[in-house]
Image (cartoon, rainbow, N blue to C red; front, side):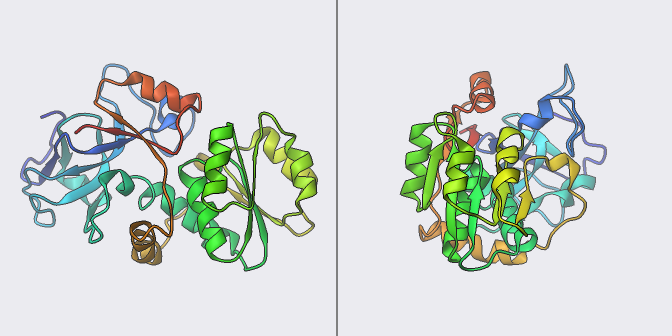
Length: 278
């Protein structure tokens, strides 16, 4: 066991078959909605694990629990923080990787961005940057499902091929094509921003008058309230289960895998980057 329990009578443990989601923002020390890593202490991450011991009345042994705890084969969640996580029903029997990806925070981010922030409408055209990533690939497929034309950018030809495979109307490699030229040739009124920078500059120069921008790439600056995810939790697992939403994940096995973190930072992963401790 690793970690401390201030109240050992209300705690649970997650075993090594938990899944760890790689989070680059925690490493920078910059302002964020998560604290930076602390030297000499275990890394903390969002993960899914199976409960092997529990003295908390709301969490049963054998349950799947998603929350923030140490990056470890075994972890302890103090009783006073248990309710900050979620006991997962997983009625659809989805792989644990999906529970930290498509039906976890990345999927919820795409859902809220499109439906609550973007207020998407059938017939619109949306441009999504980093479109092959965990959020972008889901946002694009949900937008297609609602009758939008979808444009997506990615950083390699293989990622572009994946976008075309899952139904993007226009997909291009921003490293080899001129983003502004592509956007000028494909008028759009909605932008799902996952990157900022030069891509955002190109968008500001080309988006239609009255256009809307969903700001997802600067998360530490705009998270001001929690959203109601009831509809997302009701609908998304079924869409993933029946294949209507297709998912690509980049899964690395084993806890001793610093290279997986570097791969993610350098964009070598295709799809959601996950560490499996099975």
